Amino acid sequence: MKRADTTDIRMRIVIDRPVPGVLHSLQSKDGKPLDPQRSRDGEPLAFDFAVRIGPGPKFYGDHVRSEGPIRQFVYVRVGQAAGDPGSPWSRRMKVDIHDIDPVLLERAARGGIIVTTVSGAGKDGSPACATVLALRRELLER
Image 1 (cartoon, helix red, strand yellow):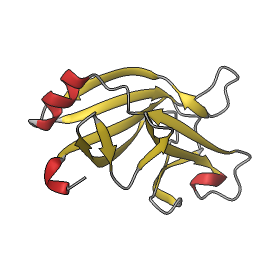
Image 2 (cartoon, rainbow, N blue to C red; image 1 turned 60 degrees about the horizontal axis):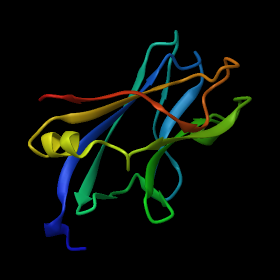
Image 3 (spheres, rainbow, N blue to C red; image 1 turned 60 degrees about the vertical axis):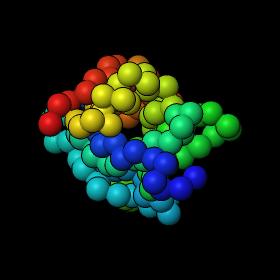
Image 4 (cartoon, helix red, strand yellow; image 1 turned 180 degrees about the vertical axis):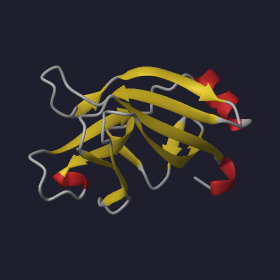
């Protein structure tokens, strides 16, 4: 796919109510932690990144991972995986992006940021991991 056939979109993942003191980060293209952040009191964490969208829609970019022909997602690294060797946790969250409403994608292409909010804690109170479902997804107008 030629870059000219894609549209740049800004995205943000918000980790709502993360476990206090646990380091979180995006996963870089080479699999390393990127932009590590720690919530002191459970306040939300936010990670901004850009993607390119082509027909399908198909997502491209340094943070985009694929699984099979359709599923695309972004990893959020947690604890040791985010660069904290003293953490008792080493996990990753999968935040799906392939299921974003095409209407929202079209609106974002004209400006704004698609914000996906996910829960930072699992049912047992430990940091969320594996596939995390979006609590909400909205367009933040610029």
